[in-house]
Amino acid sequence: VILAERKRWTWAFVLLALAFLMKFYPVMLLIPFLVAQQMELRTKWNTWSRWKPFAAFIAVCVLVMGVSLLLSVEGTVSPLSYFETRPIQAESLGSSLLWLTTFVTHHALAFEFTFHSLNVQPVHIFTVLITYGLDLLELGGLVCVAWLQWRHKIDLAMAAVLTLLVVMVTGKVFSPQYLIWVIPLVAYVSGTNWRWIASWVAICALTTVIYPYTYYAPGHT
Image (spheres, rainbow, N blue to C red):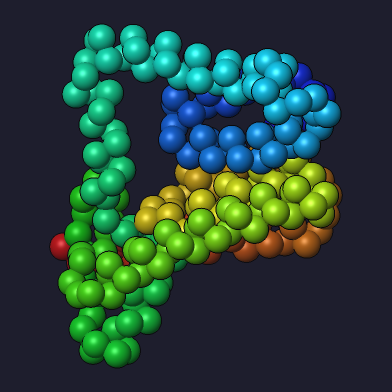
């Protein structure tokens, strides 16, 4: 983000590619990066300078993924399947929405420890509806952030924070480590704004409290 703000776009996209290759989520930052970069340029759409940084991103991804495929096809492809089949985690927004449906169905939620986390067992049609509903909410949130950035309502750094927060909140998984990943960027954007500091202290406290009350609650399998 700092490199992008300094208009060093090629290096910014290269580092974004390396971040994506280590974890899927940073790829979503392609949206605010491309919006900011394309807004800055006044050249024609088909000029090489306009697409050189994005081409660098693709080149790094192809190179590293190509080497990975040569070493192990299964090891390269399996994370995609893992991400697709992973259920709704206990800490996510989807889990809270499923809990609200218990007042209608009168069936308590059941939990199971799979995929290295505590997840909600899919028990009724509400699981599917909430999953697709969150996907639509994520898409709408990303479009809204991109529109605000395009209209100069927010800058690149704020767009990056909001993009990551949209993905975190609407995703099937929400872990404390996600907060650890995003906090440096939040601190960079918010500075000493007490509203941001108070909000994030509360969020971190609530995320910490979940362990003694949910992860070790009696009754889950």
